[in-house]
Amino acid sequence: MIEVENLRKSFGTVNAVDGVSFVAHDGEITGLLGPNGAGKTTTLRMLYTLMTPDAGRVRVDGIDAVADPLAVRRRLGVLPDARGLYKRLSARENIAYFGRLHGLDEATLRARSEVLIDALDMRDIADRRAEGFSQGERVKTAIARALVHDPRNLILDEPTNGLDVMSTRSLREFLFRLRGEGRCVLFSSHIMQEVVALCDRVVVIAHGRVVADAAPQVLRERTGAASLEDAFVEIIRQSESAAA
Image 1 (cartoon, rainbow, N blue to C red):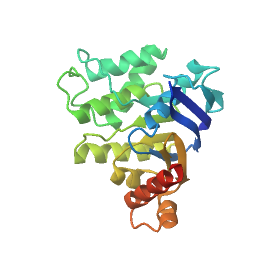
Image 2: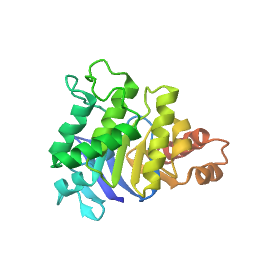
Image 3: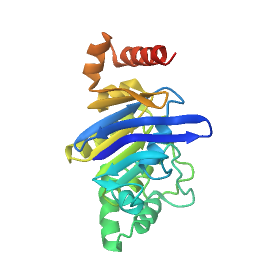
């Protein structure tokens, strides 16, 4: 479980994150939505300890991310906005490199790698160098790398961006499997179709603050919208009117 309490981060005079609070529960896929510049990526970077908050608290499975960032990293699998594969390494070698960084012994590393290669349907690319991979192949490798240490919590920043239909469907099925295992999945996306298909609950951020936090159907009912996209637009419009 990922708990965020009154999180704040400023860059000079800009309050990028201004009191964000929400909980991403185990056994659920939680969507994090917001327009460009809303503070989503800054929030995510504080959750996975790449940035230190100016104020507030992040807890992962009850562990404070500022007090014990190493313990939090062991409990997180992260797919950041920049995939960052090592192009000269094969998919298998990329996975193994991160497994060794997490301190896995070689037997555990081999076993976990094989499970993930099969689960993500990567057998055909496992021993190919990452240079020249398609977007879908890069995402699959990055997700396998993020999960090699078997974390209970997963943070995904725009995971389906640029994927084709088959890769998107494969990833969606894999995320449902993780949810079924009782893991916590936090999912940021601009693609409303994927949010509707995947998310049990949606947290909407605007102007660095949480302006909505509910199941997609509840957000549609509250706004009287026919679709989640229309509900999102209405929520952002209301937040802008309130901020004016």
